[in-house]
Length: 292
Image (cartoon, rainbow, N blue to C red; front, side, top):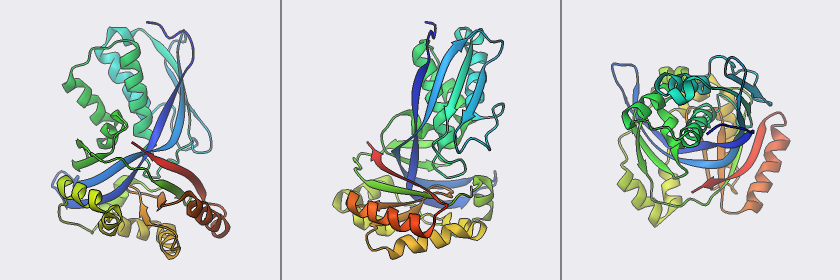
């Protein structure tokens, strides 16, 4: 089936409610546990088949400047599919990504873009890919890529590649604040010296079903300490948000640098957003909700 027109794809961001680093292992990776939800902030991807000699990927928008059009996660997906499928090998595409998700923010935009394109091409061209090969492609994108295979909340563990569907429907108002300075995941993990004990999916589900606000009291991110040292804006921002009694929960997502606050009511969210925009005029903010 040929792509005879532009297709518009929506590529969602994610937030980590908690992120526990259990230990560092000899391969230089870290064993982690995290509870993740997709949110209603999207990059917009247009894709069409083209007669040009080579697939072209381009990025536009405020957060596109640091992304290479030649070395990115979407290029990795196209290259991988070309190697395993004749249906893709002789085709070329024009792909344009409008970056609404800040890069280096811990919101997962790059992995989301790649998985969104991957799932679209698999469905559109009816590609028959063995599970083993699919997992190899996902590993090339990144350990967090499997989060974006569907819309459900996930409990992730091991290096981030072990995924369990989290049986709870989050309906939360979320304010995102990005302090206009990216974090580099590798650097944050290298500098991390905070570790936690395991907190199983079963225990997490039990607490949340009983009282989600009780869970918020236990939902730490072990990477915050290292992130604050490297990027002091994060520490100042989190401290300021916590002082606003209207926030029900404040956290840095992933390895940062984006922070978020959760609110019972949209009214409180709007009040807090106004305060943040007044105090931190240059910071990017966005209002959104969790997706379940």
